[in-house]
Image 1 (cartoon, rainbow, N blue to C red):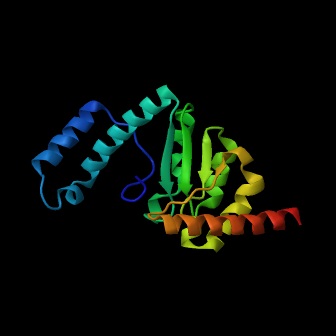
Image 2 (image 1 turned 120 degrees about the vertical axis):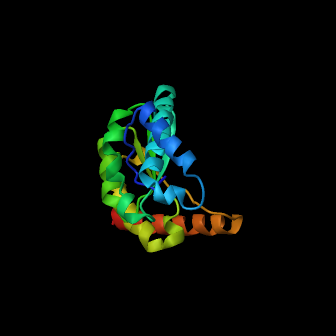
Image 3 (image 1 turned 60 degrees about the vertical axis):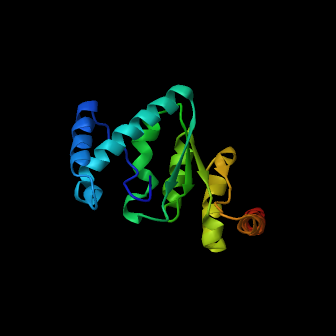
Length: 176
């Protein structure tokens, strides 16, 4: 979701979605999704809203990639109204860099929001250090996750080792 579209999910009617979908089907082919980007967003918004409604009714978690790519449209602050609307969903904000403060605020002020440092250590241990320094003390401790977004066992193992090292440094500094 965060890599090709805005994080915010606008509401639309089934009729609006149907009309947009008809336009996309009629224009199918190379470049149709680029040429009819507004229509594609309407269809995506409709589908995402149905997913959110179902997740809310079942009290399911919803992981969402924030920050890192599609920078202008991946600030987790865009999710605030959605987070408040769907109170039964446990929103897990992945990555968040460079929007660490926004993610911290959302997790601190909304009991249904968690932050996850996934992928940060693989980008740079210093980025993970920045995130953990802010999260620890700002975000309730039981709403901070530290996972590794890897594609191989070696990458996972290295990521865990680096994460532990950074966490030891950050906690030592906080204690000091």
